[in-house]
Image (cartoon, rainbow, N blue to C red; front, top):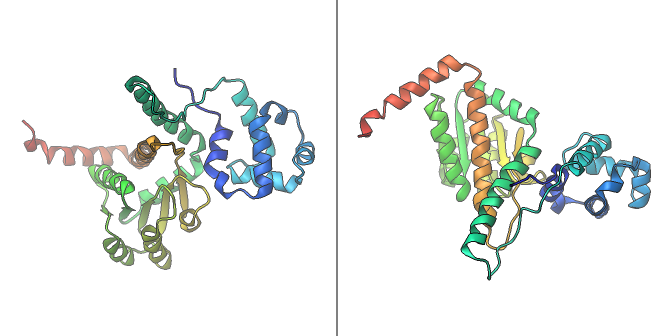
Length: 284
């Protein structure tokens, strides 16, 4: 049976590359002694990690909690539910059965971890922006570009004016024509893709709303985005989570499309039926 890992572990691993030295000490203590954390006050924890109350509060907020108390509650909840290590690396001696299990488990784990760190307020804000948008432009490069194409397909199926670009010249030209009435969805696992960031710079000049789908909470992309939707995927030796991260991105797209469709079910269902009927002659 696949069980999800503790939320606080997923949050730490998604953000750890941006920790200060002090935050690394706090994270190390939390990961090694979670049962002790739930019994400590913020002042007691600051003493044990040779930090300060304010450092601990900043750490909690950096990994997505409102404060220390909310983090403690989440840690306590996770301790009451046994978890298992899901991000196992693939080894040379693994059988095909073991490889299969590890890759499928990594994909399942990524979905569950993404569920834990995905913020409802950010999601709702993104859905509201998409609902009001005059048009939507979706950009992504490489593997993220495939997700952009899938998003294009899904939004088009419910009748929303949308375009996707995988070529940076097209991304730049398209971004230059957007306005404050439009929305760009930028998909980048790392959040550091220069081509995507250059397109977003044009969007910001034109006051276009930007929705980011990325794996890292502290990146150049999230600094420019109005709404940030985070996946969680841990790299392994053969990058089995490269596919898993795409699955998480695709799932977020499904949530966005469904969220928009539910704002006016009759209208979007009618559009869906029309686009579906338009291709019926292509089937046997």
